[in-house]
Each structure stands twice: as C-alpha cells, then as structure tokens.
Length: 407
Image 1 (cartoon, one colour):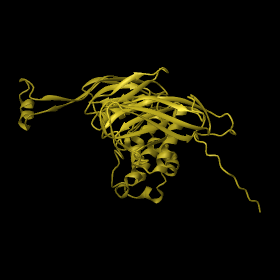
Image 2 (cartoon, rainbow, N blue to C red; image 1 turned 135 degrees about the horizontal axis):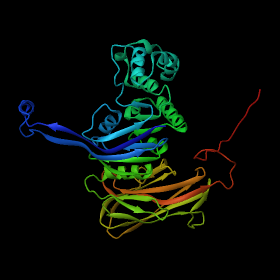
Image 3 (cartoon, rainbow, N blue to C red; image 1 turned 60 degrees about the horizontal axis):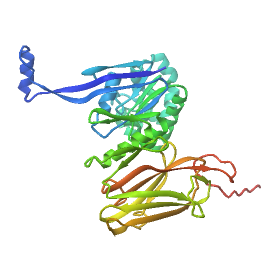
C-alpha cells in the first residue's frame, strides 16, 4: 500500500547580486556567504494515508510543481524530508524524459524502465499500452511529430500500464481531448477502488471534488489550508476573487460545514428559502416538484448595477445548474443603500434524489471577479427525494417519452 509523509519540507534557491559573487564564493570559501536565499516552499507538512486521494491546488507560482518534484525526488529539498512507501508512478511535465527523435515505442521502453519495469514486462504490456493510447501508426513515428495530446496519451498509458501503489498526476491531463480525459479519469477511479494512493494537482474543481478525499491549498509557498475538497475549492475561488481586498471569511453552518463568504459587503443575502407551490418553506422536495427559490438581498451602499446569481451543487460540490440575472438580461440599476430586493426563481426540481446546496453571488456583471459584493457558499441546503416517480439513476430527472417500432 502507498503512503506519503511530507515533513517540514522547504526549498530555497541561491541568488547572487552579480556573477562574480558566485565565483568569489567558490574560490574564497572562508569568507561570508555572498548570496541570499529565495524560498519557494517553506514548512510544508502533510500525510497521505494508503488508499487516500488528495488534491493539491493553488494559483500559478504557489509552489505546486516544485513540491511534486521534491516528492518524486527530481529536486532535492533545502529542509525537511519526504518518505514514500510503495511503487510510485508520476505523470508530471508532459512527456518528461521523452526523446523527440525516438519513436513512441522506443520512448515507452525508456520510460517504462525508468518506472522500474523490465524489458520483458514492457514487451508484455506493450499491446495494452498501444490500445489505451490509441494513436495508431504514430507509435512508430518520432515523438517530434506528435501533438501535445498524443504525447500525453503515450505518457499516461505507460505510467499507468500497471497499477501503482502511489499515483502522482500533475496538470498534464488538461491538454488531452475530452474523450481521453474521461478515459484517463476512469482508469484513475479504477486504481482508487483497488487501493492506489492518489496525489492530484489540478485547477479542475470537478476533478478534485469527485476524485479526492481532501484537498491542500498552497499559497505563497506555504500550506494555507487543508480540508474537504468542496470547502477548500470554495475558499480557493474566493481567494482568487478577493486577492486585492483579503475579505474572505469562514463561517460554521448548523450542519457543521464551513461556509465560505467573500466580498465587499456592500450588499448581502439577508434571507434565502425554497418554497413549495403553496408558498411554504420546505427543506425536502419531491423529484419534479415545482419550487421557488426566494432570495432577499439588502443593499448596504449604493450599487450602480446589481446582478444576483445562484448555483445548485450536489453533496460533492459539483455544479448541477447555475444562472444569474445578467445572463437573463434582468440586472438592476441604481440600487439605493438600505433598499431590499426580493428575487424569486421558479423552476421544476428535476434533480435526482440526494442532498444539494445553493451558492449565491451578488455582483455587477456575469462574474465575481469584477465587483464581488457578496459570494456565499452553502447559503441553503435542501434534500430531494423520489416520492412519486419510477426509480431512476443519476442526478437529473430526464424522463423520456419512449416510442418502439417493431418490423
């Protein structure tokens, strides 16, 4: 079984004021250091237990790639240690180690041996690698003629030709086509079911929330936050929107979850409820029932242009449906301080049985990255039950009219 233990990990690079300073430090070792240390990572520590899946997220430059290189041993740490137990397969930089003048097949043999396989084992697995990569005759063409997607297909196929104890995947999968991405994630899910430990670096919110047990947020080279994927991804998105204002805050909900709230506070959701056909508040809704999402917004300051949006998410935080009054061409102009606005969104609850949440956003355009007056996750939690419909699978009620013709 695979286990990863990262303890007090740090990485710093030396910076010299001039090139002569570097030379002087080498030839005059007794003198004081002529460099200063620039820290890329500091005091990183976490453990991934056997069979767990952890998502690693952060803005560009947060130190994610450096951390993966330290974990896989391609870069040496300045401080701290990394301990791993089990067979490791890492898919870091796209096609890393591939020689452009060698064919895909030749590169498979080289990459496979770097992963610890024997030549005989690679020969035995080659038909499966070719079949999974699906690049046809290109397998015997030089890698320099490959597209980035083809390189990723071969690299992923050889890295996952046998189930590893630990699988480390960087953003490489993001360059593939949608079909191969689905195929790759299906293989990763299969590995997880059989006990593979997963460390995944991705900006894909759905991938992190559907595959991972928890997430780690890196910010400025330090471990900023660790917790459930939905909570961390919400905090990460709020952090991006509020990088300038630093107005992100966390509130505990009655259900024990951490709610992320961000924004300037110039407008706020003062009340939110799900109403049935009679106008009564409900927390449990039947599949397909007509409901109204009622949201009351109070302006604390003058808002030149106000847009309200909502997103319905499943229990893993994956979006089911979202819209806003900008997209519906219903923005409000010149909302006065102290004014209260009541929004009512009517729709059939065509979702499958399960628990869902509603996130709200009060903004000025279609995105919270311009004017974020308030963004509130877990503003409302409700349950959908199937009380009257025939049994069906999935997260959407898409009942078909079936026509069958026999000849």
